[in-house]
Amino acid sequence: MNSYRDVIKEIKDYCKKHPNVSISVFEKEILKCKNSISSTLFAKEIEGANIEKHEQIVIDNQDPKALLEFACEVEGANIQKIGDAIIKAGNPAYIYEYASNFEDLDIKKYCKAIADSKNPEWIYKFAKDIPGADTKLLGNAIIDIKNPEWNYKYAKDIPGANIIGHGKVIIENGNPEYNFYYARDIAGAEVKKHADAVIKSKSAKWNRMFAESIKGANIKDHEKVVLERKDPEECCYFAANVEGADKKSHEQIVLLSEEPELSYYYCQNVPGANYSLHAVIMLLYSDQFNRKIYMDYLKDKVDDLSNIISQVKTEETEEQKEQNAIKVKIRKMRNSSIN
Image (cartoon, rainbow, N blue to C red):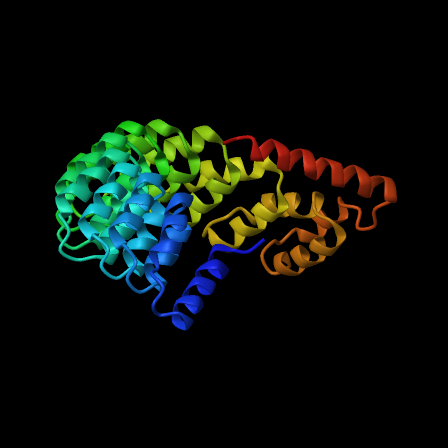
């Protein structure tokens, strides 16, 4: 079966050979197809084609991709009329692309169409990339959508954005990740309110991140959440990275987790760690390979290391290896369920 492109090429070649033949003979048949591809190709390739009629075929088909292609490829296309059809089709990606490709458009109409689409990604891109975009209108549309990710991006990247308005959406949404990012990255953010949202979320990770990264954070309030969640990994990071942390309380949770890797991390990164207590965890619950690493690390740090080692069988039976492997999996499963 011949493609539209092949047929149009054949018509073009025929007209070259027979210059006195009217193209209307073929054009009538092409128009009867009511096909956007064939009309676009005919209007583009055949000299003397009735641009307006082929354009109307494409407009009537309401395919935004075909509309964009006609406007870009056909000399003499009615850019304003096709633009109205693009807006009517309502696809935000093509509304954006059309506004990106052509000048002298009524940008206000395209802004309204993008805002009405309620698609936060294309609203953001339009505000960011299209000269003359009504960023206040588009910003309000983003706020109304109430998506924390795109409210954060809009406030971060669009000059003149309503910082308080976008921040309010994120605070009310309660997403701890974007409350953290907003407080960290957005000048003029209401840091205290974002902190309260993070605390309310009860997320150990984002409370630790907030205390660690945000100047003026209430360390004790964020720490309380981390300790209540009893997440040993986050307790390790909190004790290691947050000035003024209650190291002893975090250390107790790390020890209770019986995770040798976390005890190793704690000893390496937290001044004042109780090496003797961590040594028991590191040697009792580790495999043979890691146990040798831990013993080498602890030999200059624990006075009674030999006594601890004597309590741990350095050679495990196959049955003990299997038991310990299962125990490790249970502990990891237990700890991963904390959050």
